[in-house]
Image (cartoon, rainbow, N blue to C red):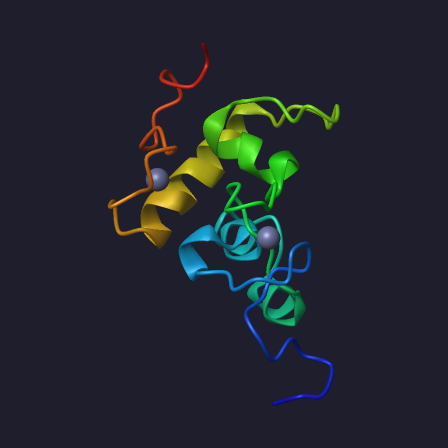
Length: 109
Ligand SMILES: [Zn+2]
Ligand SMILES: [Zn+2]
């Protein structure tokens, strides 16, 4: 392994383990926002809130459509569609309950 690479799969925010299906960096790469080369060099972060960790609301909103309360800009519909189809690929269509399963309709309310 290259020095400087994250050697453990722990969240850069809370320090607890991050499963690939809740790793915001994996979603970011799968959605095409960053390259996989960058993703492997980036410390994981929880995507959805997990335990006492707030996760990454600015990225999670791409999937849930729930705005980031801190005022991060809303993602475009194109970007949300990319993240949702990324989610369904990452999870082999066995998505967590917060995924609207690729559709844009369910989360626009
Ligand atoms: Zn965390
Ligand atoms: Zn999904």
